[in-house]
Amino acid sequence: MSGKPGRNSVVSWNVNSIRVREAQVREWIEQYQPAVVGLQETKVPNDVWPGEAFESLGYHTVSNGQRTYNGVAFISREPAEDLVFDLPGFDDPQRRVLAGTFGDLRVINLYVPNGQAVGSEKYEYKLSWLAHLHDWLKEEMARHDKVVVMGDFNIAPKDEDVHDPEAWRGKILFSEPEHAALGKLLDLGLDDSFRLFDQEPEQFSWWDFRTRAFRRNRGLRIDLALTSHALRNQVEASWIDIEPRKAERPSDHAPVGVNIEP
DNA sequence: ATGGTAGCTGCGCTA
Image 1 (cartoon, chains in turn purple, orange):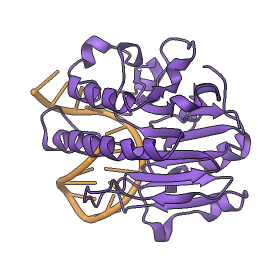
Image 2 (cartoon, rainbow, N blue to C red; image 1 turned 30 degrees about the horizontal axis):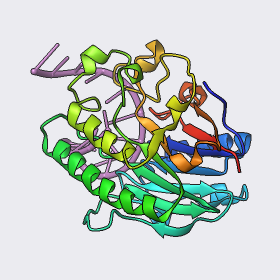
Image 3 (spheres, chains in turn red, orange; image 1 turned 120 degrees about the vertical axis):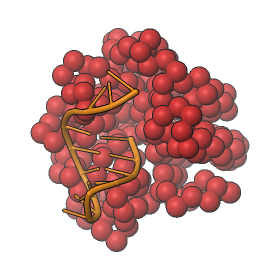
Image 4 (cartoon, chains in turn yellow, brown; image 1 turned 90 degrees about the horizontal axis):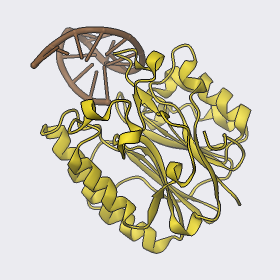
């Protein structure tokens, strides 16, 4: 791992239900005092978002929630400004987008559709969603210099991000059209921050519950923090913290993040 | 080709 969580961290964490993971998230934030945390799969509507658990630590929160599925949120030391809750022009009841500005940093928190299986209806939705994301990000990149686009991308970028690339090649999370869509996002002027640094091999951010994949580290790196070129000389580290994945009743995802020099 | 586990919900859907 290059670096570790700290006060300069901007963090993405798919918590797979904030109701179940509330104490884990609160304790993690108490330990590291990160600047911004973007959550995915909170699975609660806004009226039962447990913001008070984090506001009692001195943090601000904002939820873009949904019952049962999806749902994204920010927990941040400074309040978010210029919030965006949707992909413009993409009418979608699914709550997957939350963007906010923290000082001079634009942070875009995403829960990219999973896609279920290549060729399925949900896969087509995923690719369409990513195409609309691209068009909106192009505008966001024009409006803002320092941008972090982070979240559960449900795409593993390269072979080294997959425990068994030959088994996964062409499958959901690792198909060519998904790679093309991610490539188009990077072409807007973004880096996969994790690869700005030398990293230990076999570092992943998600391990399937069903195959008990964590025990053998059979994972994928699908949780990403993309950083704009203007941030290159401020990005000090990019890391995955697998400690919370070892907890009792963990999320299937680990928190990932970038440390950005103020 | 399928199933395994987990969460939410109310036993099927999503991941």
